[in-house]
Image (cartoon, rainbow, N blue to C red; front, side, top):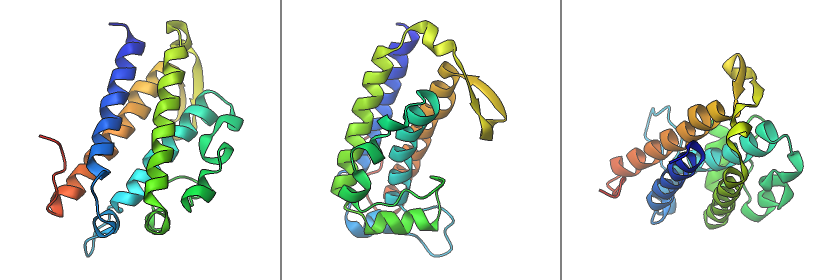
Length: 176
């Protein structure tokens, strides 16, 4: 198996885990925050995860802001979700997610997942070598490093948070 096929498979598994975890949530579960918790709501984490994937791929890696789905396809208006200026998880993001149309936000997520897979399918191995400056990582990284060490990790890590938060509320987090 080549590295691009591996990346596609890893993304598919991460996206599937996230979507199965949020599929049957009530609004109360989606917006729940325990007293004194520092972690954000499931809805906030979900919104952050999908908008970050869209942003990182289309704006930072591809350098095509016109392909940033959230803006290009009017998802802010369709969802009522405010992704914030910096995209960071925060109280503001959780509040924005609680006010959003979560079904529409999930539809946006599916569009992001499809765009990610199509983009990965279009890459060659040599495309993975191109360097991009990632300010918060302190320097340049190859596209392959960004995919494997930031994007996939990000989706899996936040998917795990979502599953854990669902589990502490009595739901079935992971499917096994």
